[in-house]
Length: 170
Image 1 (cartoon, rainbow, N blue to C red):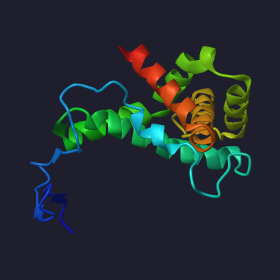
Image 2 (image 1 turned 180 degrees about the vertical axis):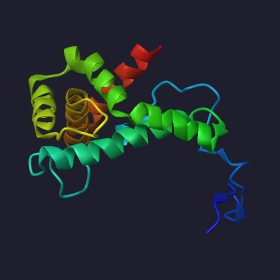
Image 3 (image 1 turned 180 degrees about the horizontal axis):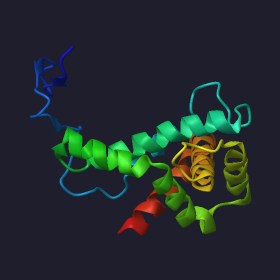
Image 4 (image 1 turned 30 degrees about the horizontal axis):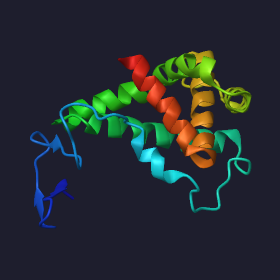
């Protein structure tokens, strides 16, 4: 199946070729908005049966990895660019070393409960890929676990922490 792009307002589809593909995100701006974590604002009281206390650290890490990747994709959406370039930027941001760095930047701001979820995720992490450093992989898994837990339990706190990472990046 070929790649498709919705033409806004008309609801029609038109094919685009892979080499000409430019990522188009609704409301994309050349400069970042006030908060790239604003998408989390309306998520408090998620209407699903999942509760962080019922999921294990690795399940929360799996969820946290998806939340972190979505956040990075939305950050990249704020600037126009070719799909391949945006993809490379997202892949760089979701790698274990980037997640471990994000955790390092946030650690002084984390509550005891958040640090406990980081510890639980880190302790449950395997050794990671063969070429990777086990400690780095563990820190990244701890970060993902905390992100997954916060996504379910306190999205506004997660948005606060993600905004702090944005501030650090400037």
